[in-house]
Amino acid sequence: MTERRDDDGHTYALVPTGPDAESLPSPSTSSRRRHHSRGVLSTLRAKFLSLRPIPRLLIILAGSLIGVYWLLWLFGDTVSWRLRSHSSEASSSVPDEDLEIRPPKSGPTIPDRPKYEPVVVDEGDQPDWAARALQVKHAFLHAYNGYMKYAFPWDELLPLNNKRVNNYLGGLLSAHSMTKDPILLRKADELGAALLPAFNTTSGYPKFSVRPSDGTAMAYWGKNLVILAEMGSCQMEYKYLAHLTGKREYFEKVEHIREMMEKHQDADKHLLPVFFNFDDGTPASTHFSIGALADSAYEYLLKQYLLTAKQERKALDLYLSMTKGIIENLLYISPKRQLLFATDIERGVPSYIYEHLSCFLPGLFALGAHTLDLPPAEKQTHLWIAEGLATTCWLSYADQTTGLGPEEMLFTTSSPKWYPEYTKWQNANKATRSALPPGVHTNPPPVKEFLQREYTNRRDAYLLRPEVCVLGTALNPVVLITPSPQ
Image (cartoon, rainbow, N blue to C red; front, top):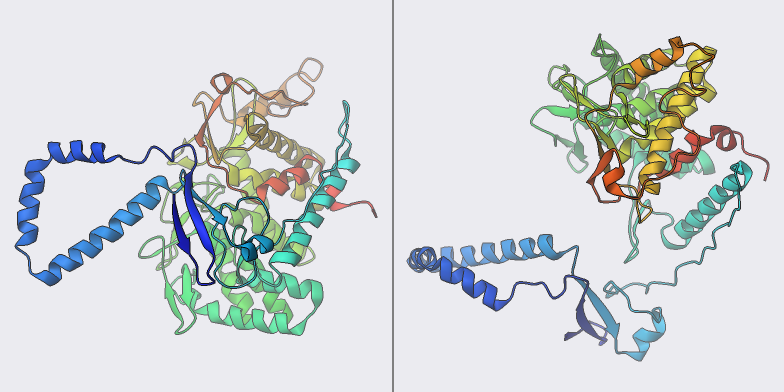
């Protein structure tokens, strides 16, 4: 245990904690490694000593930085430092319990977190959707009040030290939509104009980022690559900004992207690959996905149509065409519990990976089914898909002993495509077939024993994503779309 003093004169004791706190490399281990590599080290030492002082100093500094980075990477998730304040002044300004973070040297101390009592619902055999809607309302109020107390008017908050960040065009436009404050629109207009240099490419696709100070646009994914999610997810913001400001340039920049998406849609699969070349505008991969690198491009097509009061027919046509491609190419079903999941394909070969990120998809299908004038059979199909996918996302949580779903699930390769199985069910005798199609269940039981599941946790990390909120919409969209007056 060591002690240190901050700028205000407060003394803190630094105590290593965590299950792996005692597993740091010991001197004896290092000695054994040096013994085995003595000859190599002797040679390197001789070469090092033959260098001039300045090169030697630079090598020492570089080695130190690499060593620190390596230690942080290796032990950052397992070793934490507990701070105990020995100052009565500090003790009076922070909670009584030990803090797992270092208090800021300046600025306000961290206040107590608000208490939240969850709504306890005894549903019995049938879900009480009104009570669940009330739970959603309580959760929203809890999050909103926390935002107003700790983050307003910023966009982001680092929860442990309350550091705040402000960014995003969409946030300014949303805030203006709710408040009608002209300064928010003015700032959104300024930000939208500052980002326009990103579109200065041969194809009109946007680059990854812009340096506002000089308008330099920079690529990220490769020398001339752009991902589908980025080129597709700027359309709502810029079209809404064009509507508010009357500036045609905002609309034309992103409408051109929609036209290019329509032009390069795969003729057979009705999908778009995840990478495009922003020099000539052509597809740059054979990888099709609705997960990472692609998700929001599909999501925003429907929302563009709804945002324009159902006037932008071209966006709707592209959405319906792509949902057909998703249904016929990306949906699979597990052999045991008949779990419906969406995966990606590379050169026609599925990965059988279902990403947590893809759990937005059931909400999208449900939203389309309840807002579009679809033929009854197509609407029912979309609702069944929404229910099946949402159930699988829910089970990814319910199956785990922690109650937290994995970032990625890897299903067995014996999982067949869903659409042929669905077609078989449709063509079967109605008197003898099951009431629900494959992949749609009524209260499927969770499986806690991981060896008995038809998937493995490919990535155990849990990332808190907005898709969690979408699941409630997919399972019962009417409650959330047409809520009660309460």
